[in-house]
Image 1 (tube, one colour):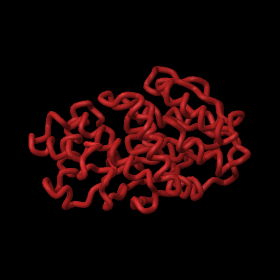
Image 2 (tube, one colour):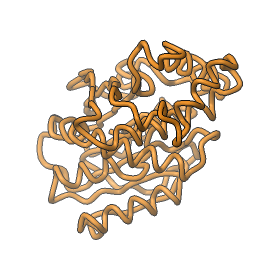
Image 3 (cartoon, helix red, strand yellow):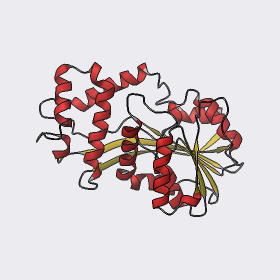
Image 4 (cartoon, rainbow, N blue to C red):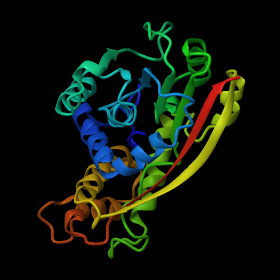
Length: 285
């Protein structure tokens, strides 16, 4: 699983690569237990030896897969050289350099690089960014081992951090920011978020072996990174939603993002990460 803003083959253009990498890293840190639980429950028939992580980002899924399957090697594919560099650093810190192959590639290109015949393909928050995810699924079907497994993880939306009645000077601000950001994403033609992935998998020749939705909540008391994750994510939202927000909402958001303000997001004690992710595990039919 990757970050809600996610570890993907393509990235939202109003966010710099550095900002995106920071959010991906924070998502991995805060949601590490949930990512591990998803990987632990994958219905693999035998431990895979070769795994492909499509849209690997900075490596949340890659590292969880390496931990879960100690005999496996992972090919991590992403379009961002900066993200793959960060993934290389993480793999080295985990003592797994020799088990990771990094591959920079555009998954919307007419041809894909050679990915071998993996027993497991992991695609977390990446398919909805692709121009033609149906074509991508057919390609995955063609390269996956006959008894292999495809794991698709998709997000219901970006995570929430503030209580519904916060901040005190603009209750409901976060939901209005999300609505504005949703309109911005629509303008950028991110049209596959929320797609019927079960039907798409069937159309590409897969049989869904398992489908489940996880409601995730992590309170700030559980992870000190929640505040930093909220700050980075709200900054990102401001970059995408500023033009669509009312002036008073933009001013309230700026007060939350002010590191020197006593009302800033890092000083709040009521933060939590709340999100929903759905997992499909599918095999070639």
